[in-house]
Image (cartoon, rainbow, N blue to C red):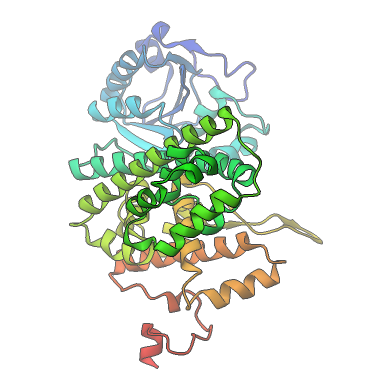
Length: 437
């Protein structure tokens, strides 16, 4: 097989890996280090070798996962005769089994940012287009230029693996719960609009009520409704509140239900209630697993145990990040802007990190803005953005991202008053900044 410069016509025409002769490849390439770029897809992997003189082999096409072992054998033999470094992008999970096989074979595996590959496309060959063979060649070249980092496959320890399971389960069940709550909200607005003014839609009491009765009619007709509501609500649900709920069911202005309306609400509420119970089960498991982790415990004081566990599972130990901005960048909360001449683009977050981190930290920001140290800043920010809460909440989440690194990596105690330096604290605040003053 001949050495082919990337500029040569049809340079990206692929060859099946089963037809590759390693001896011919070695004869055609110069002595010295070799970098290998891989573009991994669900069904196919494209592999390109870059020689030390900046020339390339034609892409090899590998069926994923059927020919992974064959590919690893070829690269292992190539590594025995040359100094070999393999580069892969960090996107998706289709390449995890390949990365594990390469690590098991004692091959050097490096990670290349997908954004770096995208930005390098036109520089590479003067054409901005991207396709599998070219992507593999670009990955190989970026590795050769030192634009990569070591990325061996590592199995999680037992505790971290269990935590990752419960984080995934919690996030999935919460999304399922929100799906059914959204549908229930619209149905209650039609058939029992008074219900959500008395009980939170997400409360277990209201969900159990809807799962049993399917709407206001069944509740109003049940002589034992007060006793059941008291049992579901516990001591926090007062007799006065129970009376109001039953009266609202009797006097509702909602649209009268038919049998299918009742059935729909019952089934939706049952599914939402089960998802709620699963989220509570997952949170209890995460609290148990987080007990021996000092980093998670310190972060949990600010954002809660569940969110702190999400950060640990998705990003790892914050001590592995040299500074807070790098930790925030890994979340995708760093800013980007596109400006040219008189055009000034809007600041936006990059969203290049794990979406689960941004979602849970956003929820944490929603809770944080209720605190007296943060609420004045939040309200002032909303006023400047036409009462839109999202920009303010994203800004608080970005501040929280930095704070989580300080708390987790440096061991400092979380102080909400330090999120916005220079902002006056409410009178009587017990923050460390107020005490120091």
